Each structure stands twice: as structure tokens, then as C-alpha cells.
Length: 325
Image 1: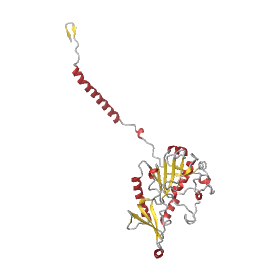
Image 2: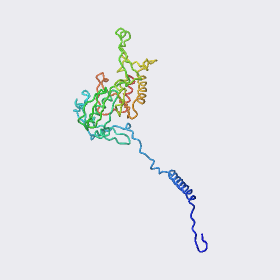
Image 3: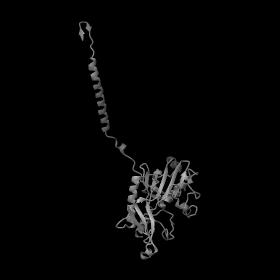
Image 4: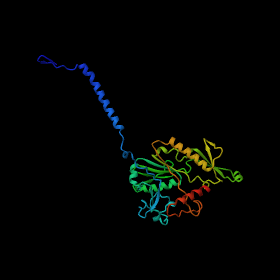
């Protein structure tokens, strides 16, 4: 303001200034928040939302390619099962058989790199639980991994049926034989009783109790692969030596047939795995392959003479035959 020829400058009272400052800061923050919300509500370009289709490794086809790389291992691998060592036993046309490779639909499947796998699994353990399908997979797997660590040694601790330890990476890979997954034991009949009805004895199956071979070892493994299937048939357990199913220590009534028992066992084993196996453990369930014997079943001098994968109609025929049997 002016007073005569003199100018007098006034300043804002300190109390008023101190009261306005927080309000200004608050208003600024509110404006920033409002602006941020506007940005979040702006439509995003549709191209950013497009994700690649999922890769289903199980949907695909077998492709014959003579240029397919041959197996990483040979017949000298110490983890081979002698009777199943096709390389050592000089099975015919192995070059043809090894020229088939699986090609998933819509995605690629690269060849396994044993060094990369063991490096990723360093200080971890992998366990297979189930029947001979898992055992055969394990044997091939061990021979592949041995390429990256020739110092690997056999490992049969913790009730493992077979396995290997790879000291270079501190990795253990092993198989626990539990063909039904649940606990079962033979209960013979006396000779007099067997002569009356033709039943020599029964196999008691406790549907809610895992087999001793794997019940106490799950915490040791970081990855577990389960399977069961081919033992659930009357060729394994004929009417002379049938399965009898128990739950909570008592016979299940009415009695279950073998396929009903299989379903109940799977329900209980899956429940047990979800409940008792550590959450950090990576778990897989492996499906079963169709039978492919010629000239008789596995225990009737049957042989596998195939040089190419089964066609779809052959698989259906095999499944139908199994149901009829």
C-alpha cells in the first residue's frame, strides 16, 4: 500500500501461512492421485493383452525323421536293466525305432539337455513311485543324465528299488516300486480251504494306506512322479488270488471288483499326497500306455515287434481288449 510518498509492504501473517501450507500439499497429492486414476482407466491396446496359446505337450503326433539325433547313451550305461537293454541285446531295426520323434501341436519340444537339467536341479532330488512303466522311464532317464556326470553311482537307499546319485551336481534320482501305490500283502489259505473254493489266498489292499516303499520318503524329494495302472487287471490277480479291499482296517462291504478298487485307491492316494506331501514338492501323475504285445501277453511269451508307434485305432483296439479281458 502507499501512504504519501512512502510504500509500505505487508507480509502474510506467519500463522496464516503455516495453516495454508498443509492444505496446498494435500490438494497437490489429491490432484496427483486423480491423474493416476485417469491413466489407469485408459483403455490398453488389445495387442498387449494377447498371450501366446498354451503349449499342450500331450497333443501332437509321431513324426518319422531319419535325421533325428540318436540316443545320448549306448549299451554300456550301468543303469540298464539287462533283460530290457535293447541296445546290448541287439534288437533289430533300432535305427528305425529311434528315428521317430514326438512333435506337439502348435509348439516346439527341444531335446533334453542333461547338463542343463542337472544344473537346474543342483542340490535337489527326483523320485519316481509306481510300477514298471516308471521304472523303465527312470532307467532311460538315468542313462541320459549320466552323459553330464559320468561319475554317477548307483543309489538304493530309503527303500528305493533302483536309482543313481550324481555327485557333480549333488542330485539323486530314484525309483520306489509300489505297483498299486497303496499297501497290500498276501494272505494265504490253508490247503483244505483252498481245495474247497479254488482260491489259494487273497491280497489284502488297504486303500487308505500308502505302500511302505514310499510312505516315509516323500519329504526327501523335491519332485515326485507317480503312476499306476497295468497291475490292475485279472492277469496279475486272477480269481485264484484276488484282491480284497480294506478301509480303516476293515473289509469294504459290499466288496469291490478290481476296477472299483483301483478308483478308490486313486482317490485315497491323491488325497494323501495333497495332504501329507510337502507343498513345495513338485508333483506329477503319469498316465499309462496301451498294451502292445504280439503272440501272447507279457506272461504268455508275448513279444513287442513294433517298429513304429501305435496308430490310434490300434490303441483303441488295445484298450477294448483290456476291458474284455
